[in-house]
Structures are given as structure tokens and as C-alpha cells.
Length: 176
Image (tube, rainbow, N blue to C red):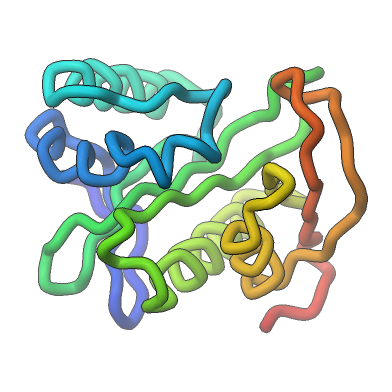
């Protein structure tokens, strides 16, 4: 298990195939998946979750240096969600951050803490700006984007065939 980073309360590490049961508590939940489609469909069983994790593990190992999908755990070792940095599908030049938590762990600041740490890591890799795409109506996602220091820059329909709100933070922006 390769640890990517650690915060005061969280560990961000590579996904492992054995994480499937806990990951299903995140990606198998309708209240999480509704904001991810069509980029990712709701995962319906442990076998499908295992296949998704293996895909993320391979993408992370073979992809752009420093980008990938990672598990988010509490310092005590409980898997509470996932976070990722990846290239946006159009032109593959812009870097997007995404975060997902199991509903049982919402409201504790974990998404903000993990997101801010991963953005800091991206800037350390010479990424100049990071974007978050939020579906209209996802007030929790928009609040998290603002809480990690992102600013709303408008709406677009150029990604995933959906109208999305765009948030951005630049390496030169003041950090919260």
C-alpha cells in the first residue's frame, strides 16, 4: 500500500483490490452516484467494485505522473471515500479533482481536508490550475469546491455532455 499523502486526520493512499467492500459503501450509494453519472455509473455489487478498483489502480500506475485515483482513510484506518486528479476529456490539458465520500462520513470536513491536500500535491507537481466540475443542484459539491479555495468561473457543456458548474483554483491563488 503506497501512501500518497497524510493530513492531520486522513491518509490518502493507492486503492487496493481488497478495498472493494468499503468502496462499495461510497460508489454503490445512490446519493453519491447521482452526481457522478455519466462519467461513472453507480456500482451495484462487490465484484463490479473490485473491477472498478483494478481499473483505477492500472490507470494510476500507467497514467500521467502524479495523477490518479486514491482511497481516503481516517488516521485510524477506516476507508471513508476516494479522491482523484485526472485530465479532463476534452484536449486532455486541464486537470480535474474529484472527491467522493460515503454518506455516513458527510459533514465532518473530510472532503475539504483531502481535497485541499491533493490540490497542494498537484501544485507541487507543477500543475498551474485545478478544476472541479459540479452538477447543478449539487450544493454540497459546490460548497466543498469553495472550501478548498476554488472560485466559480462559469458553466460549460463541453465535458461529459452535461451542463456543469466550473470551479478553479490556481497555484498563485491565496490558500484557505
